[in-house]
Image 1: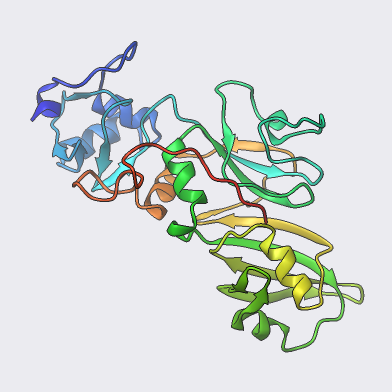
Image 2: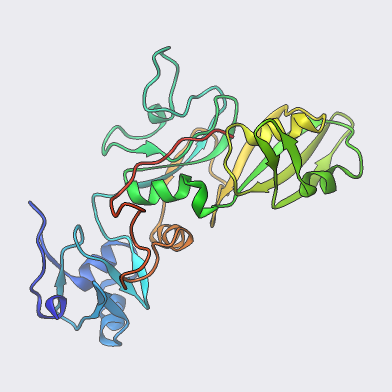
Length: 276
């Protein structure tokens, strides 16, 4: 096919590269390891198996290993940020407050995926990958997000069950996928909640509705990604495996087969914005 013979689509100003070089640059493995993947018939370009020597345009073609799409476009940036409190999740702020973009490099330009409100801290993704951002933020894809909330002690024994059963809010019943108490002392209790709904300020409204308003709130997981040991106010690029895990979580992880590889209208989307 086209990819196997080296005849590929070319983006403007883009150098078409050998597939093993593209895969190595994307963090799949060493050049030699990527050559072995190709020799074993495990690599496809636009759904067609390639052989050693094949070339591809990483900005225009879909490359997959074992049927799993790899993020190979060098123009795409995916960052994880541990957002501090009192920083707003927006590209610019008319009030002149510090924004999340002040914490990451100016170029290439990236945008926050969804929104954490000013007082909420923790895991935030920023990217210029519009289709991925759209799917991560859109409720239809039901991407799980986990939060740790600090509330005043004590809390009743049945609170976790009540949260799991659903709590009525002004915009309908809020459902959590899981709720558990992580720890407590005489003054505070830590509660871990996992949701997939993404309503505005849902965690804060949910806990206020059961009589335990949030004192401090942090997001610690989005889909397959966890915050880990990343320090407050710091960022890091996602590695190739993490990006592939995100692609899989939102239905972009498979090689092209005419299925669900694009947005509803067939175009790339920018992210929606919701607050926790």
